[in-house]
Length: 157
Image (cartoon, rainbow, N blue to C red; front, side):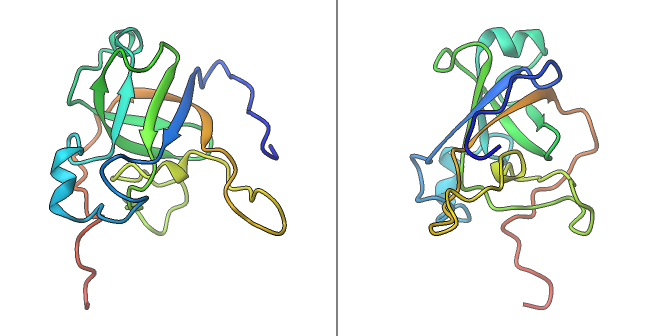
C-alpha cells in the first residue's frame, strides 16, 4: 500500500498500533530473564480495550490469536484502558517462531508483528520499514497448546 494506511475492513475491524518495547531494544534481550517482566502467557503482550476484550470473551492472561490476510500470531492478553476501543497494541521485537517453518502463513508462537504488517521499504534508497500499522482481528486462542520455542537452542548447535 506504499505507506498509505490500509482501509478498515469488515473482517479486520481492529487497528494494530505497534511500538518500540520499553523493556528491551528492538529484539535484543527477548531471550533473557528480563522477558519475565513483560511476557504474558509466554508470548509478546497485546493491549486490548475492555470493550473489545469483552466482545470476544478475552480476559487478562488469555492466549490470543491475532490475524489478518498476511499472517497470524499468538500473543498474551492485557486488558487495559490504555488503548481505545477498536485499537490493539503489540510491541515489536518478538523473535519469529513459526509453528511449521516450511508452511507460509504458519502461526508465529512468540508474537512477531512482522507477520501482520506490510513488507514494503520506505524508499528504494533507505529500505527502512514503513509504519507498523495494519488492520486485523483477534480471538481467544482455543487451538492445540503450542510451545514457544523462539529462544530454544537449535538442534545441532
